Length: 248
Image (cartoon, rainbow, N blue to C red):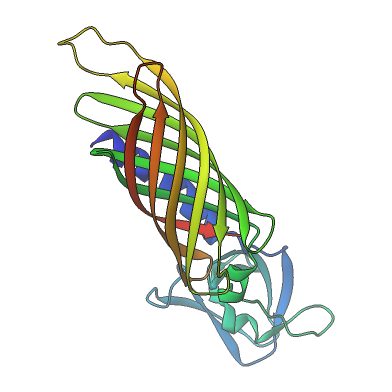
């Protein structure tokens, strides 16, 4: 497998499960008050129902994955229950339990986001992992790590950016970025005498965030880099990327 795809898969496996579990609630015990609730083998309506918890039965809420709650009864039977079914249970005080599902309002008021993006950096395959903190609804700071793989050289880049989001309340929300960092270039060619080098970079960019569902959003962006080398002329590079992000 191409190194870019290997890295993309690894980051995806690390990021997406964490995003799905971001809404995990504190462990709680509840009691079924309606006729029954159904336990599925896995989180999803397409998975079979293997157990039915009847009225009066106690269940312990273990963790949440998107719209599904993993529960366990007093006999140790564990299964997955949809959040709507949890509304048919009560806690020890007799209050109905309810869980909110992240929506666009949460997207509009997010504080943190983590994402992965795959694309093209000046003709080479590139992958980026980033984290961002929103200190106002319109402004955020981002830190990103990028690796690119070309025919003649590979590279690594560490950057920081200020991001301005003009209309944070929009589902399709455009943004602009400005930032800088460092880039390491590792030539592959053996035809000429080449050495690894490290240079400063500056960038400007624009893109759009698209709210999808739950805590997930799609991100498309373009950045223009100026690589400040120690040679006579600075280098310029363009970058297109598409990725998926989770917000908190």
